[in-house]
Image (cartoon, rainbow, N blue to C red; front, top):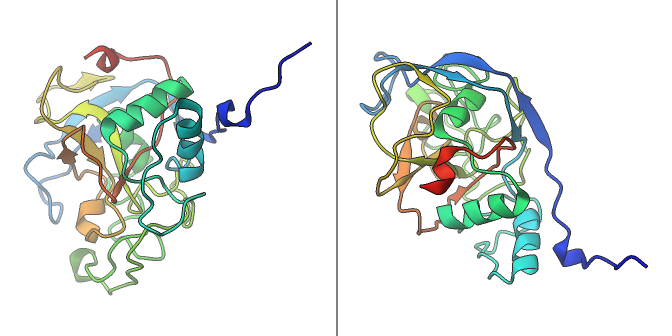
Length: 247
């Protein structure tokens, strides 16, 4: 007689986008508006991988908490369900990824997937509007027309996906990557996993409260891995384990 499965132990389903293998120029050109010095361009080649179409939601993360006895993160009173999970540290994100048999994207994978073949500041082109992403529309890119500022997260998938079927790569919440933060190497890289040690972990993409310029495909930010924030979440990659997991 088969044993019944506790609903809290059933792992949530993830919808995946197939990301093709390829080579791209990571970073931003020197003439890109609002470019930062840590965005040095360099060639990166990546193997194919699968990335979650959406940012991990409260519904998915809460299932993990119920199954493992972890405390559920605060939702700031905005609601849970299909809003992106927030108030998760890098360590929390890695724990969820481990539980799911997945991992966080490397910084290179994240930018490659975000760009989806584009070379412009955003995967939407030279501008990002609040009809395309959830960010602080009071501060548009390059003095473009102002947009809406909703002052909180929105349900994942509220806007059109990029060319590779990924939603909310710009705005809504920042997304933790696996890498330690450091300057980029000056040589071509293949499947890079970042430096072997560091103080801060990388996160990408901009969030609901940020200016448009921080949502650029090349923009890099970093934070203490043990800290959490109401503006940071994550998504997953489904490929074999890489070296960063043992660092």
